[in-house]
Length: 189
Image (cartoon, rainbow, N blue to C red; front, top):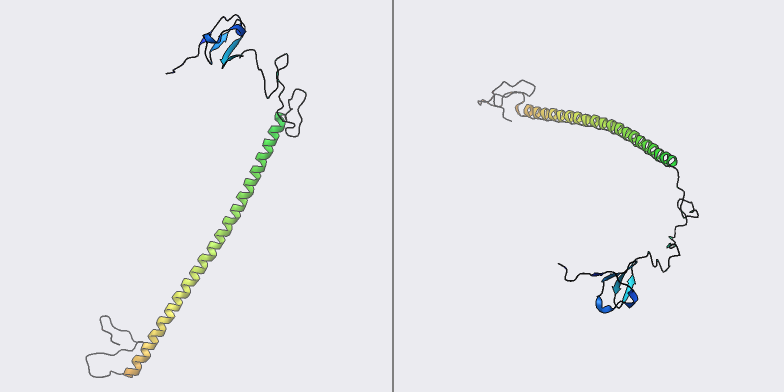
């Protein structure tokens, strides 16, 4: 809640003769024509229009000329009233339409480039898959070749040890690698 209220004193006959003892700072006083506010030890008129703007006082009709600093807008100078003729709606609509066309063309160009890139990526992917398949095939062929080499080596070692005949009268049968080995037979090297 406010501690102090502004009072309004009405029907003052002459503001210049109004005693300061009848009112306080910020109290409003009015005669039949104007309203005043008490500001320290004087009364200031707050009705009757603008008193001053940027250190300029109003003319007889109450107008104050203000320099806004605007000299040109879009290359056009203001007329005597300070107004600037703007482009017509048709020109603005045409500019908007041209901007949209430019944006649509740019969108089309980007889509075309994206399609080309996608096609190139697809072709590169096919080449990579072909290279992978070729590498896997070469690895398998190399692996089979290595296994054949190992089998040939074992055959040579077996033939050299046994000379194609059983080594002794033990319980083991000796087989050549080129011969089929029966299922369930133990094979010792």
